[in-house]
Amino acid sequence: MKLIKNIGKRKGMPFGLYECPECGCEYEANKYNVNRGYSTKCRPCGYKSSTTKNSKRGRKSKLYPVWQAMKQRCSNPKDKNFHHYGGRGISVCDEWSDYEVFYDWALSSGYKNKLTLERTDNDKGYSPSNCEWATQQVQTINQRMSKTNTSGYIGVHPQAKDNIFIAAVRYNGKRHYIGCYKDKVEAARERDAFILNNKFPHPLNFKYFNE
Image 1 (cartoon, helix red, strand yellow):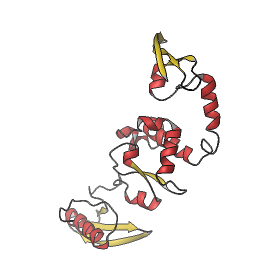
Image 2 (cartoon, rainbow, N blue to C red):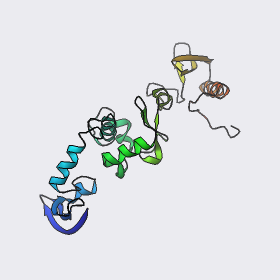
Image 3 (cartoon, one colour):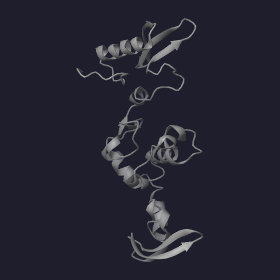
Image 4 (cartoon, helix red, strand yellow):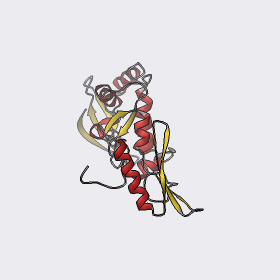
């Protein structure tokens, strides 16, 4: 859409006069909404577009709730998972504010039923360069350390009663018990060694420059 001119503020919000990219007519819209990817068409064309999104390509598609949930956990403080995403700075890239753009990327990136949207770097947001489709098993493996784990190391859990640390790893539905250790660093290194020896895809606690 093309901004023709600024109109001024209405109830404290900036408005502009735009040219609809589909029919060419002029329409007024909240500039803040337009910058966020909303109100990018005149009302009749926008209604026609929303009707299209109710088709297989739109809201009835299995991808629509994936897209909607992604946005909610990054932008809605009331979402139960917001503190894991938006609350720690994880956001959705501007281009994915448009569902159809996300839909096209998903199909071109190998989306299939039962695959989940996975960020390759858990400290970065949702974008084409940082996302891929993965099985639930892979996503579980890549999850960050649980808040209930007070050892500070992935897969290492303290046993206060015996004053020891248990190292273990779960893969393909099976829990692999590695051992008990008096030192949590030793437990973490033994877990890393077990993962490397068995060529498991799990994240490591330490970086090894000779990998």
